[in-house]
Length: 255
Ligand SMILES: NC(=O)c1ccc[n+]([C@@H]2O[C@H](COP(=O)([O-])OP(=O)(O)OC[C@H]3O[C@@H](n4cnc5c(N)ncnc54)[C@H](OP(=O)(O)O)[C@@H]3O)[C@@H](O)[C@H]2O)c1
Image 1: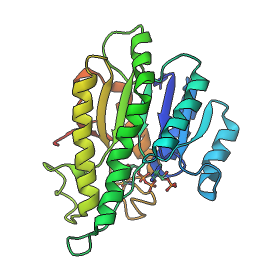
Image 2: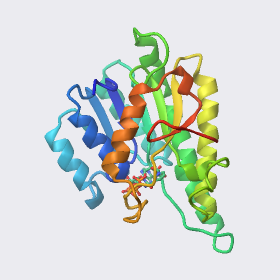
Image 3: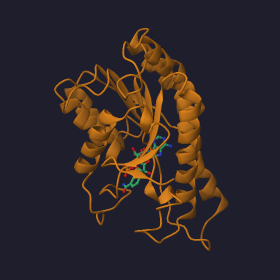
Image 4: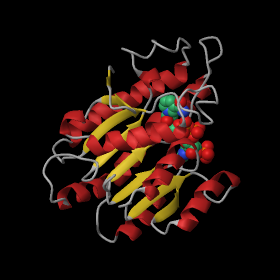
């Protein structure tokens, strides 16, 4: 695969799909010059797999970033800027997220709020802070149109947040999780409209039901296949995909 982008930032990249993105991106022959692998606790036990990977690849920069903590997002921006040395950030992947297993009987106010804080407010804060770098990348690009190699925001969403298709395979209602991903889908649609003028592509992606801590062992899809599929889809995105929800195989989903 040709280089996806010169610089890429992935949130929640210490395990699951985020870690697999980082692993596969380092394996591409023309890997990104700067791969900002962010996570909320890089020095803790949960950061070990990412630290081990970064030790082998000098283009991976492990950066602390807790998505719903504005001070942490601002500090991460400072670190990223120092590596980019005046250049822009091409691709921002909002991957970090949490799930819930609530029903109407069990759902609590605090669970709704904390899920929204991480899955919806977090990505908006990250986009707000990193937008100047994305705009710089778009302005500095020599190519016409929109692409992940130029400037893009990818929100890792879920089919469970789709009102049109989200009840086909899974009937559980998971109020907090579904509502947060539906909100993230709307955020993606709004961003796509607002940032069209800057030629920044904004797309929401459903990764499939994936064997990770979140997806559990019961999931049919390996993390390797999901990440590989998504990276292939990202390489083919253009202006016509901005403001849409697609799955890991590139199939367009209903909102
Ligand atoms: N797995 C699936 O079947 C599936 C299906 C549809 C959509 N998705 C979506 O895909 C994305 C990745 O899921 P996954 O399966 O890889 O989940 P996962 O294995 O549970 O990993 C979640 C990642 O998000 C990070 N994270 C959680 N809260 C955070 C916060 N406040 N700030 C920064 N990072 C935070 C976690 O960091 P810690 O290690 O610090 O907790 C971890 O790196 C999520 O957005 C999820 O909703 C997954």
